[in-house]
Length: 181
Image 1: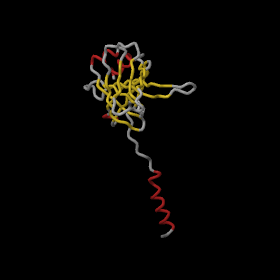
Image 2: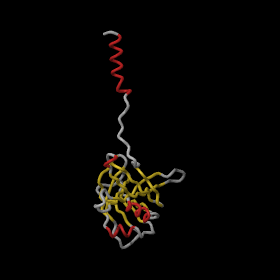
Image 3: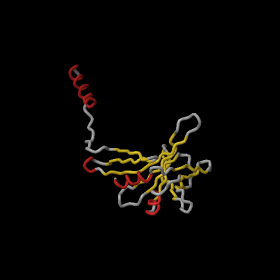
Image 4: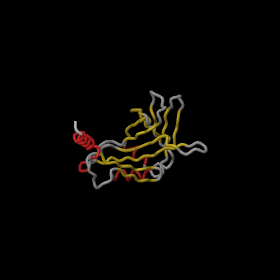
């Protein structure tokens, strides 16, 4: 093989490395948006092609824990949302992987008469375990009135009950913003 044919072969092999990556077209709307309401965050994401994208939104609270002298670390998230407007409101808990199986997580309000919402575990991945459940309309409306802390409870792998506080500061405003999305 001549030097010229070797050089041309190398150039043709290297051409894809110089080719510009094809990126999907961008729409006029942002792919992800967030807004803070007290202790709650409204986050929305557009999924699909820009001209056919659908928007999915949820309100989320991140529960953080700290030990003396150490920075706060997120240990759990509680989210409310629905995939389609016609579906019921769902509550999803994202917790550490050290959960006891079989068990359920429980979401409770400060109302002593209200029954906790059972959140069956759906899956565990490296970043944590997910549990979710459906909220009835009456409870969803009642959450707008909450002023005292609720809780998210689960049992860890060592069979110890864990109860995390859930603040409702800003919940009504975040829920109202979610309804407008």
